[in-house]
Each structure stands twice: as structure tokens, then as C-alpha cells.
Amino acid sequence: MERMTSAFAHKMIRQLTEEKQYWLLKEENGCSYCASADEEPVIPDYHYDEVAERLAEIDNKILKIRHAVNVSNCSNTIEVMGETLTIDMALIRMAQLSKLKDKLDRMRRQEPKTRTMQRISARMGVPEYLYINYDLGLVKKDFQETDERITKLQLALDRYNQTVEFDVDI
Image (cartoon, rainbow, N blue to C red; front, side, top):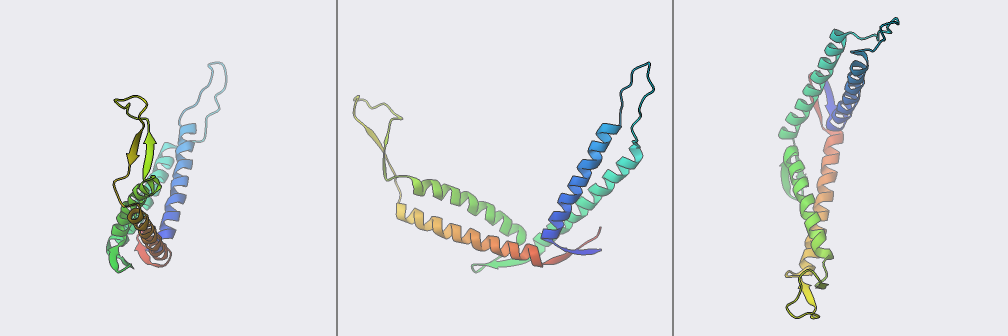
């Protein structure tokens, strides 16, 4: 049993994934070989059972670490701007807020009136304009508030990821 933070767990998962790639490449390069009929073959040092066992061990460690992270994310909470969220809820909220921020950013960059050539007017030579149908000031205010919420949520998640420990049965 090991105690670790979420940040450390994710670092371990990255290291294990790199190690797994090493063994997969070793298997790919060693599980077969080419030789001409008139030469002594150079047989790579490859043992299926050893590589398969090592890959299974790595997958099992990743499985246990990811499970422990998920359990921790579902059972621990953070407080952000008066809202209590489990970590998994905070991650979902972060994704929602990021999409909202992107939409608000597009809307706040829109000019109140823009000349357009997308549709051909019934009377040639008469310009057409695209007008926004919302309060640009309100959109800019909502953008700033959303950006602030994302920042506070990210800081709370960073603090959690760096400080809260949980048990991993490796």
C-alpha cells in the first residue's frame, strides 16, 4: 500500500506508460526475425512469456492507480466560490466553463454591426449588414466572470492534486 497525491499518481501513470511502450517496442522488434536460407540467423533475445508478464504487471499497476485516483476524485471535495464539488464534478465543471468561455469569447469579439457579403441582396449594390442581437457589455462581463471562475477552480484543483493523499494498493 502506498500513499500518493493525484499529481504523483499521474506522473507514475506517465512513467508506466513509457515503460509499457518500451516493452511493446522490444516485443515488436524481437518477436520475429529475417534470415536468408544461406546464412546463420541472428536471433533476437526475446522471450514471449517474460514480455507478456511484464506488460501485464504494468497494466495492473496502471489499473490500480487509475482506480485509486477515480475513487479519490469521487469522494473528496473542494470549495470554490461558495460551491462544494467533488473532484470529478469539478473536472466536469471545468470542461463546461471552458466551452462557455470559448463561446463568450467569440461573441465578445463580434462587432455590433458588420458588413457581410454572404447573401446576395435582391437589389445589387445594396450592402447587407450583420447585427448582433445581444448586449455586448453583458457578454463581456460574463466572459470576465467565467474566466475568474475557471482560474479559481483550476487553483483549487491544483492545490488538491498537490496536497491530498490517498492509498494505492500496488
